Length: 200
Ligand SMILES: O=C(O)CCC(=O)C(=O)O
Ligand SMILES: [Fe+2]
Image 1 (cartoon, rainbow, N blue to C red):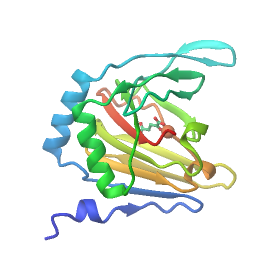
Image 2 (cartoon, rainbow, N blue to C red; image 1 turned 90 degrees about the vertical axis):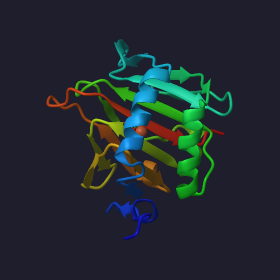
Image 3 (tube, rainbow, N blue to C red; image 1 turned 180 degrees about the horizontal axis):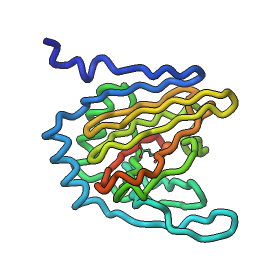
């Protein structure tokens, strides 16, 4: 049996004009349980206001920004100033760097409290991320669907993001595809997502 299969052989999603791979068991379930608990308790979660067509709404999830530098990150008219990486986040970052062969500067965390929390269609293409952004995304807690739709072709893809999994988006993925976490009436439990990014 290949004990390292989960880390060494990711599943490549069938996505023309994009590059997305998935590691279902990046963390085993005990490690993932432990991480979920620690992050729930120690991360400084916040809920920002967003402006849509001039009206102000609460963002439909909690977020937090952590980094190894002080560079701010602006998206959907929200500018976030990072906290310094915690020891826990640094360990996760190092583990991701081993499989992705890159160094990340920043982690945007999302807490979806239940199925009413969501993340609308968008691409992670802010100028701070540079061309061909690399996004490494860890999922903990309740499983949620992750949807993709191509910007110009009639193509869709979706994947159920499991507890302890890692999804990596590279290359022209953000240029050609949008993604979202849709709401779901059935889901009553929380999910934490960590998206590691490189912010120049
Ligand atoms: O929750 C997720 O898996 C995705 C989060 C996301 O797309 C983002 O923060 O940009
Ligand atoms: Fe995103």
